[in-house]
Amino acid sequence: MTDVLSDVLNHLNLRSVRCTRLEAAGGWSLRFSLRTTLKFVAVMKGNAWLIPDGQDAVQLFEGDTFFLANAAGYVVTSDPTLTPIDGLQAFDWDTGETACFGGDDTIMLGGGFDVRGDPIDFLLKAMPSVIRFSAQDHSATALRLSLSLLNNELENPKIGCDAASKGLADVMLVHALRAYAFRGDHPAPTWLNGLAHPKIRRALEGMHGNPEYGWTVDNLARAVGMSRSSFARTFTETVGKPPLAYLTQWRLERACAALRKGVEPMSNIAQAAGYGSESAFGLAFRRQFGISPGRYRNNHTVTDHVIADIGP
Image (cartoon, rainbow, N blue to C red; front, side, top):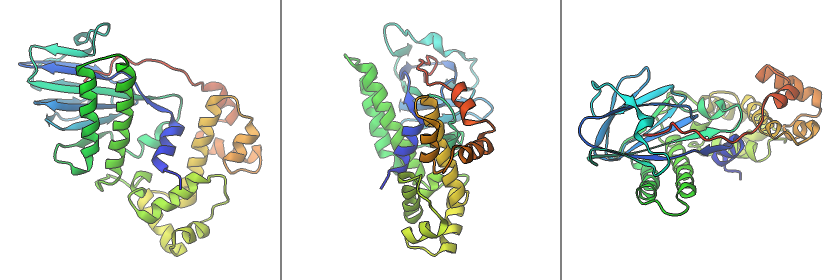
């Protein structure tokens, strides 16, 4: 069966950008603008405060990790009453990834993830704007292990450090999303909730593994051993939308990924999305995104860029 989380991340082409490390003591306060799609902040030693724009200050302790989605900016500080300076000035981007402020009473890691092209809403709408994993969160053991390895890589940089740190950040994100999916404190039903429900997960795996198949509520229910009515109700309550509405959304998300590559014939993309003709595909695409597939392809290109302002 298809691994749904891996399938989503592969189609979104989410990738990590530069990871950074901060050592500080005494009074300090740094502001960072967040241009990346998804950002993480982790405390490896000591404690600090995190103040996302428009939200209350939150105290972080050793072992705590925060993820921020689509935040305009944030402050990390030893004292919320201090006036922050530009965090970018704390880092020597040419010679190292660690910024030092008077000692190492507090050690923090930071990093970001960006996506090539749109839409990213499929993932972000399944997440709150802020997710916290505390040091006592037993579901996040693997997350903390990934962070420990990342900290060691940044503290003692060797050849291949950039590639290794980005790879570890990617692994950390998977562990974080996995832990969040099974944590059970989601503010609203989403497809991530569905991954924690054995039978709904099997239905999602079927749809992701064979999205062009003519799925119906009946054959999905049979595939997971549920009655039609019970399956439809449970799926909607868990995922937040009916089974076929979810299937349509995912088919079109996949189509967006194919269109951004700009090489596959439109007829092939339509067929892979489960549509018998380009016209039917075009109608469904415009209904979902308000733009034709051809125009979407012309407006979206996959580009590589480096985001620098992702410090802790």
